[in-house]
Length: 312
Image (tube, rainbow, N blue to C red; front, top):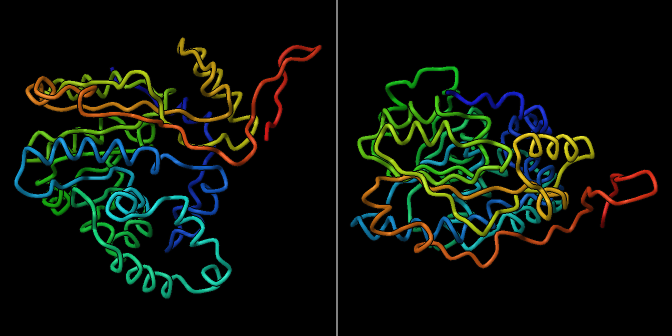
C-alpha cells in the first residue's frame, strides 16, 4: 500500500520560499538559524558507504542526490567544508550585499580552488530550477534534473542522465517524495543502485522498502544511532511531531522530546552486496548528533502538567 505522507507533512514547517532564490543565501540563513546539521552529521556515514561501494568498481561511482537543492551534500562530501562553515561564509555582510550573478561567479571560483577529496561524482534531482541551476553552475553537480516525479513522467533526457547512476541518496526528501519518484528513477537506471536514505522517524519506510524489494533490493536500518536534522521551528511543529510519533507508537523520549528532529539511516541494495558486507560492518558511527546552539522546545513539568518551554 502506498504511504500517504501528506498528512504527516502538515506537521512540519514549510520552507518553500528558500528554494526560490538564484543562490543559497536564504537557504543557509533560514535553515542555519534552526541548527540544520544533517549534511554534516550524515557525511562521515555517506563516505563510509561510498567507500564500500567504490571498492567494487574501478571508477568513481555516480551518486544521484534526490532533493539536492543547492548541491550542499555534494559540497560537504567533495570538499573539506561543512554546512556550518558555509553558513558563516554567506552570513558575512559583504556576501549578502552582492548580486546573485556575482555570487555564482565567486562560488564557482571558490569551489574550484579546493581539492576534490570526494569518493564519487554527483548529479542531482530537485523541483527547484533555481537551486539546480546554481548547483550545476558552480560545479557542485555534473548534471541536474528539474522535475516533480510525484506528478510528472520522466523525460527522455532525464532518463539518459540517470542511466549510469550507481548510488541514490537523500538526506531529507523522504516524505516529500515517495516510492512513485523512486520507481521512475530505478526504471531509468541500467544498474541496481545502492539507496542511502536519512529518513525522519515520523515517516514510515515500509512502502519504499517493499518497492525496492520487488526490484531485488534488500533494506537494512542502522540500529543504535539516529541523526539530528534540525531544531523545531516553533512550539506548534514540536507538539504536532510528538503527537504523530505517539500515534505511530514511536517513543520520542530523549530524541524528538528534546526539541530536535531525528532521522534514521536506511540502506537498500542488492542482496548479494548486503550479504557480503552488512550495514553494521561498513558503518561506524561515533555520533549522529551535533551540538545545537539555539534554544530548543522541550516539555517541562509543572503544577498544571507538562508545559512547553524554550531551553537554551
